[in-house]
Amino acid sequence: MGGIAIQLNPAPAAVAREARWREKQLENIPAGQRSQWADERDNEEASARAYLRLFGVLMSGTGFAMALREAAYLNARYSC
Image 1 (cartoon, rainbow, N blue to C red):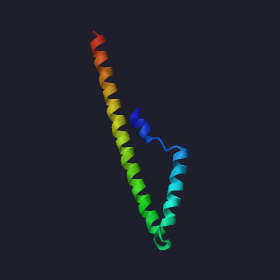
Image 2 (cartoon, rainbow, N blue to C red):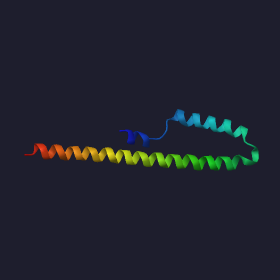
Image 3 (cartoon, one colour):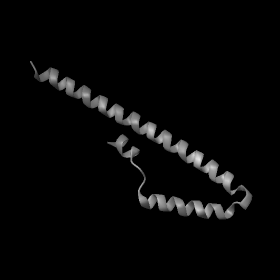
Image 4 (cartoon, one colour):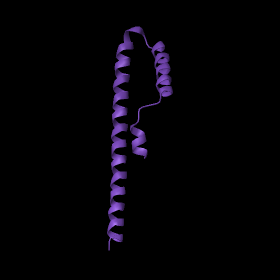
């Protein structure tokens, strides 16, 4: 369940909070460096989301494998 929950998109409130934080940070950056800062920040966010999604896939796969193993065990135990 946790692996599936990790893969869901962020809530609208979280997106709005991130946008407000980003605007506040841009106020402190000199005008000439804003586009570079935004590009670097976007790359960092994309990388973090990719790693989080990969972790979610691995966690979901592990849970699914455990469920299949349990089902096979119960099937073997009670089919005799």
